[in-house]
Length: 100
Image (cartoon, rainbow, N blue to C red; front, side, top):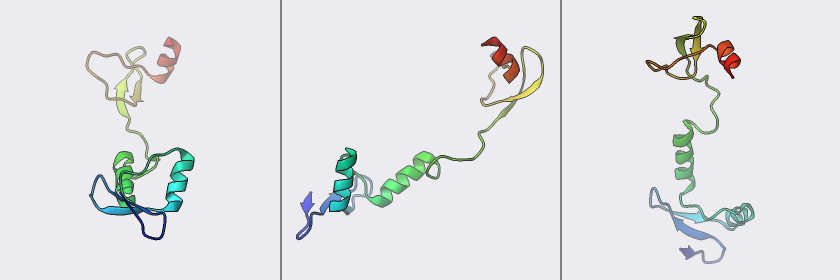
């Protein structure tokens, strides 16, 4: 780590792209107040990492996939939030609730 000449900036090396980036005095104070350690990635790599983890950043409002199934208890056509597996029972929401 190198310290800036006439400021409190610290220069860190990004763990992903190996580029040097400034960790400003304001950022240091913010991280300290929140109890965070120094960042290991530059801002663009942190943003890319969030994008990769969250499929676009933040929570997605896209509907979750549903799979067609037939309830093993009452025989009604339904959809479930998982891929039904051969030999495993699948229940509609009404039958599932009544079994709880």
